[in-house]
Amino acid sequence: NAGVTQTPKFQVLKTGQSMTLQCAQDMNHEYMSWYRQDPGMGLRLIHYSVGAGITDQGEVPNGYNVSRSTTEDFPLRLLSAAPSQTSVYFCASSSQRGAKLQETQYFGPGTRLLVL
Amino acid sequence: GESVGLHLPTLSVQEGDNSIINCAYSNSASDYFIWYKQESGKGPQFIIDIRSNMDKRQGQRVTVLLNKTVKHLSLQIAATQPGDSAVYFCAESNDYKLSFGAGTTVTVRA
Image 1 (cartoon, each protein chain N blue to C red):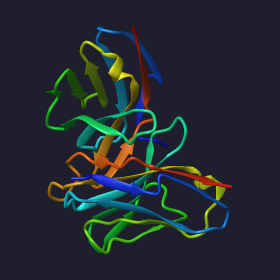
Image 2 (cartoon, chains in turn yellow, brown; image 1 turned 90 degrees about the horizontal axis):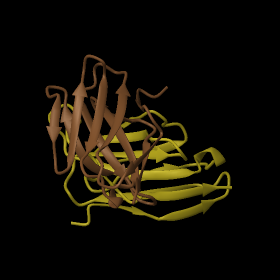
Image 3 (cartoon, one colour; image 1 turned 180 degrees about the vertical axis):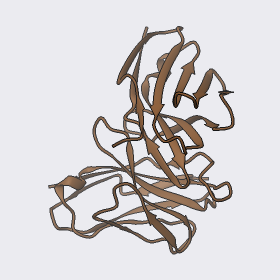
Image 4 (cartoon, rainbow over the protein chains, first blue to last red; image 1 turned 180 degrees about the horizontal axis):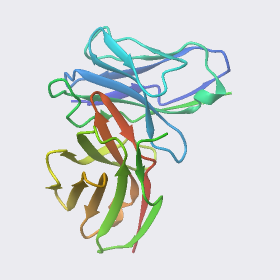
C-alpha cells in the first residue's frame, strides 16, 4: 500500500490563480480530511469527508472547496489564491468507528504552497 | 481559540533519560486523544492513542496518561533516543473533527 499520497510537493502561485491539491489513499478509508499548518502552529482542519459524496467544513474552510466523488480521492481546490493561504497542506485518512472518528488518521507527506 | 495546547513549546532531554510532554485540553466532550510525532519536512506520524474510557495506555517505549478531571494529557517516552527529536502534537477528537495543539519541540542531547 502506498498509504496517503499528495501532489504536488511544492507549488508557487500568484495571487488570484487557482489550483487543485490532489490527495489519494489506497486503504479504503471512509474518512478523509485536509489540514493546513502554519509556522510554529499545529494543524488546523479545513474540510473533511466521511464518505463518497459527503463533505463538511472544518475550522478554517474559507477560500477552499472540496469534493469526494470516490472513496480514494479528496482534492482541495483554491479558486482564487491569496498570500494568506501560503502554508503547508496535509491530507489525512482514517477508518471510522461508528458515528465518530475513533481511529487514528494517517497523514500524507504534505504540499508546500507559496502564494505571491 | 485552540481547544488543545501543550504546556511547553520546547523540551531538551539527555539521551537515555525519560521525556514527559504535557498537553491540556478544554473540550470536555472530547472522547478520543492522539499523540503525533512530526519530523522536519514530513507529515505527522501516529504514536499512540487513548479513548476517554481509559486513563493509561502503553506502547513500545511510550505511555499516554489521560486525566479527565483536570483535562490533561501526557506522553512519556522511556529511554529517549536521538531519533526521538521531533515536534510532538497532541490532538483531541470530538465527533468528526480533530483539533491539534501547537506542539512541543523535543531536542535530544547526546
